[in-house]
Amino acid sequence: MSTISTAVPTDRGSRRIVLLILTPSLVIAALLVLLYGVAIPLWPVINTYYFPEQVQTYATYRLPLYLHIVAGAVALVLGAISISLRSRQSSRTHRAVGIGYTAAVAVSAPCAVVMAFHAYPGTLPGGQAIATSGFTLLALAWGASLIRAVLAISRGDRNVHRAWMIVNFSLTFAAVTLRLQNGVLIALGQQTFELLYPLLAYTCWVPNVLVAAAIVKRVRRRTDAVTE
Image (cartoon, rainbow, N blue to C red; front, top):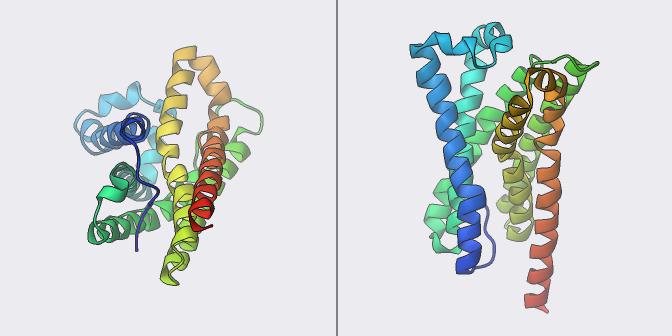
């Protein structure tokens, strides 16, 4: 079992990966675990200011919520570390990180499906259907792409495995893009947040997959050029 592996990065490419992928992944993962695992349990008053609309929902579905957050944070960190190490990691390390990443996604994705049916609808007409469908599709695509990657590596097809893992991590990275977009909506005001929040269920991951598809296409061109 392995995670993402691509060509040897240049120093500039490595710095870009750390800046755009590793650093925000570590920050968001740490903030999520600290917020839900430490801050809110110790100081419940935080719920008055942070997403108070979902306090009751989160209290009712505490187990799937916490499993989703903790396992998702683990997947985010392991995936980002694997990408940043790339060719510098040994095959044994690569395999160990991959197994941990796979286990984390396997736990988090089903819990994400559960929580999708209790996503905040906001004030947008049809907001509940939009939020639920968007987050459900995200969770299903997350799990399905992982299965495709595992099946590919089990039959020794590293190129297909690599492609599916790039797609899969782009879905894991939705944890980062969702919080960034969420922050923008909050900065624009409560009314804007209430109206547009359901749309984040799609905007947090669809652009990521499009970028991943472009990366896969580029990697394939490089691979084909080397083998010709």
